Length: 287
Picture 1: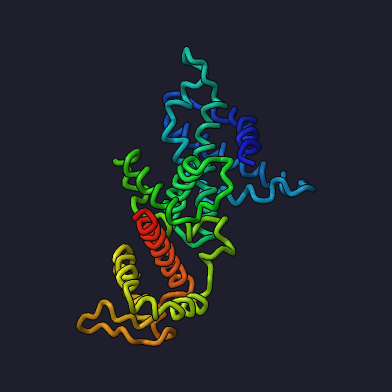
Picture 2: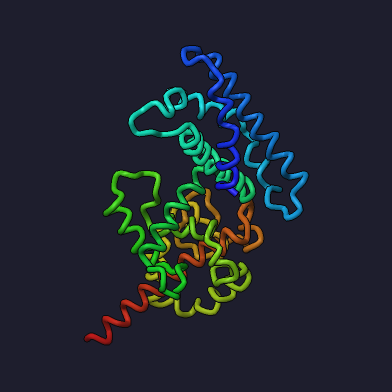
C-alpha cells in the first residue's frame, strides 16, 4: 500500500512546481493543494476499488497537517529538486518525505488499536529486529524465553550503550514481549491467574524449605510494585512494612490490576526460578 500511495503522489507532485521559488507563502499553499489533491484521488479510488486494495489508505491521512509540516520543513529540497548535480527529482524528494510520514501514520494507527504509545511501539519494533538477529532466521525455538531476554539485555548494553530508548534489563524486555509479541499468544505467558495460583500452592512445601530463598532472589529482580502485588496476592509475607497488608485474598489483591498483569509477573518468576534451579542442578552434577 505504501508504494502505491508514493507512486500516486508522484503523479500529483507537479502541483509543487507551480510556485514562485522565492515565495514561501506560495510554496505552503501549493503543499496544501498537493496534499488535498492526493487525498481526494485516494478517496475516488476507494469508491471504484472492487478488490479493497485502497480501503485502508485514507486512515493513514488522519493527520494531514503533519504531512504538510514535513513537506514545509523540506521546502528547500522541494525548491531545488532537479537542479542539483545529484539529479534528485521532485518525485524522489516527495516520495522520501511521504514514506517517512506514512511510517509514522502506520505506527500511530497500530499503537492506538493496542492502547499503547507510538513511541513504545517504535521501541518494540527496534527490539524485535535485534531479537530476531540474535536468535537467527532459521532457529525454530520460541523467542519467549527468559534466557533470550537476558542475552538481549547484555547485547543492548554492549552495542547500544548510549541509546536510552531501548530496554536494558531482562524484565523490562519481557514486558515488551508480553505486550507486543504475537508469537506469545496462547503460550504459557498467557496462563490464567487461577492456574498459576494453584501451581504456586503446589510448591508451597518446597518454598518453605531452601526454595524460599530462590523465590526471594527472583522477587528482588522485579520492580517494587510487581513484588508487592505478588506478595499481597499470595500472602507470602516476605516484605512486611508498616501500613502494608500482605494477607489479602487473591480477588482483593487484584485491585486495579488485571489477571494478565499478575499472570505476566508470575511468569517472570517462574522463568527466573527455572534458570536458577537448572544452574544449581548443573553445579551438583559437576561436584
